[in-house]
Length: 205
Image (cartoon, rainbow, N blue to C red; front, side, top):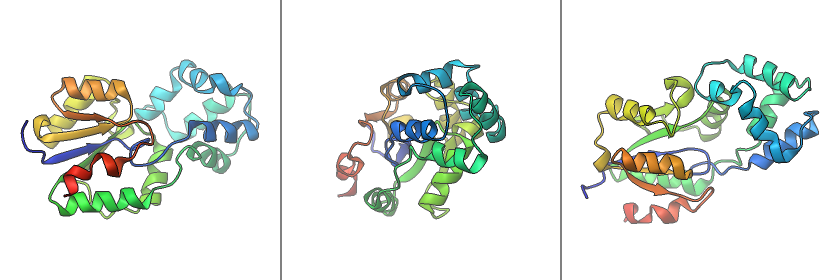
């Protein structure tokens, strides 16, 4: 194995702990009509709305409007965004320290995340990352490609000019990690909300 020079991070469930149930509960509390056991299935199946939003093919305004139609509710924009962001359970200090430590060790840090306009604004405000912490952030809503499609990884490789064999890629979804492995990355399939610091401790020594 070549020496690791680059680290490619997923966001949700890796750097930011997630609770999808928190968002479901918030929307149901604010009038969405749906049982919580098929909430995201309904969201993804109706006109493929979720995929369109995370690949930047519909705006936040369009997403809110269609969501309100699907779930037969009338949630105002600010309340909607608060409910939608409820799944992001903060930004652990230990992960912030880890990122800065890895940067100081000379690793090139990148992000590759399936994400949307509302969450991008929220996590950027939450984290307050210095501009030079990451070489580049690849957000699905900006590059119009989403994991686990191999075209998404090809885009990152071609744009960043990184060698996958010199790159460690961390993702909490098994299908994303597996595609990354097939594309030549050294991969870690971190359990959702797993101990990122412990997993990458070997790189900080």
